Amino acid sequence: MAKEMRVGVVGLGMGMHHCKALEQAKGAALGAVCDTDPERLENAVNQYGCKGYKSYAAMLKDADIDIISIATESGKHAKMGVQAVEAGKHIVVEKPLDITVENMTMLAKAVRKTGKKCACIFQSRLENSVRMIKEAIDKGKMGRVFGVHAGLPWFRAQSYYEGPHGKWKGTWRMDGGGSLMNQGIHTVDMMCHLAGPVRSVFGYYGIFDHDIQAEDHTVAVLRFENGALGTLYSTTACTPEGAQRVFMFGEKGSFSRHGGRLESYDLDTPAKRKRMLELFGSDATTDEGSRDPMAVSADGHMVIFEDLVKAIADDREPVIPLESAMHSVSVACAIYRSGKTRKEVDLRKMKP
Ligand SMILES: NC(=O)c1ccc[n+]([C@@H]2O[C@H](COP(=O)([O-])OP(=O)(O)OC[C@H]3O[C@@H](n4cnc5c(N)ncnc54)[C@H](O)[C@@H]3O)[C@@H](O)[C@H]2O)c1
Image 1 (tube, helix red, strand yellow):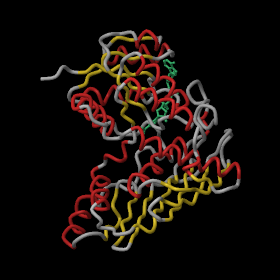
Image 2 (cartoon, rainbow, N blue to C red):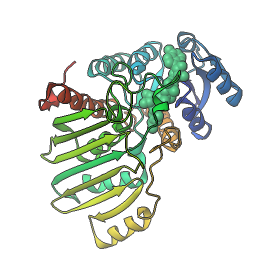
Image 3 (cartoon, rainbow, N blue to C red):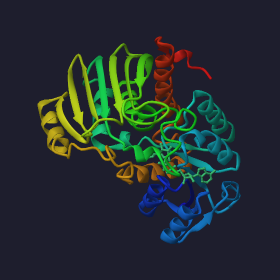
Image 4 (cartoon, helix red, strand yellow):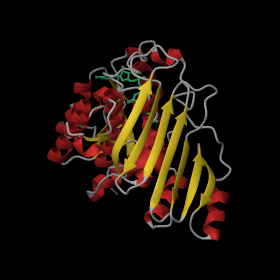
């Protein structure tokens, strides 16, 4: 049996979910944690009984560590990823992959050059209902896709944007934006994952209910490569908060999802429709994370770690490849660029 791979987790906010996921993951185990915040570091070392590093450079030199899992501020992801692959480590990178096309391109080049694997976290893709919907769409059960509409009516208190680990949130420099780049990026990714790449976007954004720099409400219209049209909104200013909504339709049918619950599934055979609603029609409609950012399950992260171990052994792409994660983040960047310029932005022109 292949040796268990050791993971070093850097960034012990969301990174604590990585540690938790690694308790269960087959083929991978937590080897070390790293944070510049001594309190967070001590807490993680005490909880998991593993090595602790205050210095990222020192953890990268640890020969026992095979994989580095990056859960630092979003604007640091690519740079820290490059440092890790150049140190000979495979990487897992939290969403968003980074916050600029330039940084993501730099990371993609380093990953290609070193031959190391890069697993991206967009865990919503791995939910069973999403996997089955995707399979149906890929098999042509929706026919030509016409409409892709999604929204995220979430809430974050002002305190979320404050304190030692809050100030980077909602900033252009480190968060790359606000409700769209931080929270709504999972929804953008779901749209791209199910409907394929986006060709062009038009967006508006603004600040409505927070004292932040970037935005707490963004809306966009999207044109997909396959000709479908889409609409999107994201916010962290909705009270009471609601669950993510995704609605898609095409020439042969439609489906609608509210949080984890499948509201309607009018695709495929009557038996398949009934089965899908039996399986996924009664889940709670509230989203994990719609109010509390730490209420996210660690299950998706566990699958991503297990898949990465297999991807390394089989020398294949991880289940969420870098290129596809990069596209979703590029769509968010394009929406912001459109909001700034008041012009439609063509994704093919989103070169660094
Ligand atoms: N997958 C999800 O659903 C999900 C949910 C929440 C957050 N996230 C992502 O996780 C990332 C972290 O978010 P967060 O809310 O935990 O942020 P946070 O600010 O609470 O945590 C970041 C941590 O990284 C540490 N850090 C920064 N630079 C470092 C360095 N050079 N060396 C060592 N430690 C360093 C900081 O001290 C801090 O403790 C973000 O990119 C965010 O988008 C993902």
